[in-house]
Amino acid sequence: MDGTVLGGLAGGLLIATVTAPVGVSGAVFLLPVQLSLFSVPSPAVTPTNLLFNVVAGPGALWRYRRNGILGDPLARRLVTGTLPGVVVGAVLRVFAVPGPAVFRLLIALFLLPLGLWLCARTLFPARRRRTAPEPPPHTLTLLALVVGAVGGVYGIGGGSLLGPILVGRGLPVQRVAPAALAATFTTSVVGAAAFAGLSLMSSADVAPDWPLGLACGTGGLIGGYLGARLQPHLPETALRLLLGTLAAALGTLYAAQTL
View 1 (cartoon, rainbow, N blue to C red):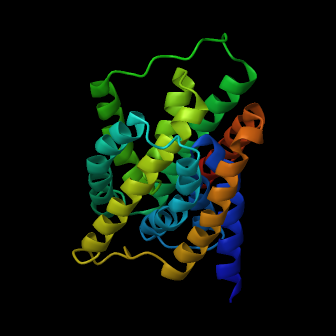
View 2: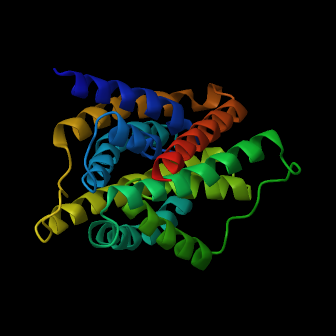
């Protein structure tokens, strides 16, 4: 087993263990690692990241299902909106933003504000609120559609964006996490299939890096299960702060490289 496969396995395991408790598959943090450390070309890095989600997703989902918290209607609403969005995002990724410079800028524009927002919400909460009601169905569908498109471009399936948005609105992490991961998994399956079809119509390097994607996904499969199992025992504040700091740091790095 070569160093790339071992590195992908270890990276997927570590990232998924940390991120699964808050409903993030880990792909949002694995993607910059694939670009910088493993030098996966663009746009092939996006389907490689979706492949990670497809392989890694069942680990956390199985654990959440055993806990009896996966059957929430919120999961079905998020999946319904993100599925068509991720197909639109895949088309945009291949034909509109294939260049690495543009893609790095998109990474920076997403990660930096998300990281700063998570850190600010953690360190300086405005006030403690009771659990907020779920947004209206049409609002959830529209939000999921937009997020699915962005996730299709970025290669994160969409759930990694929906999770922080809904938790920031006041919904409990225990409810949002399994729903967001379910949306990530299903949209990643559809997104990966979309990229497979688009590879037949594009001369660009669209096919995923199969060995790396499978290695990262295998590590994520184990890490996702561990993270979901550890969720009741982990301090939510520390996890939010860790995720926010990592996202902001990665966003800053890619913004500097782009400029």
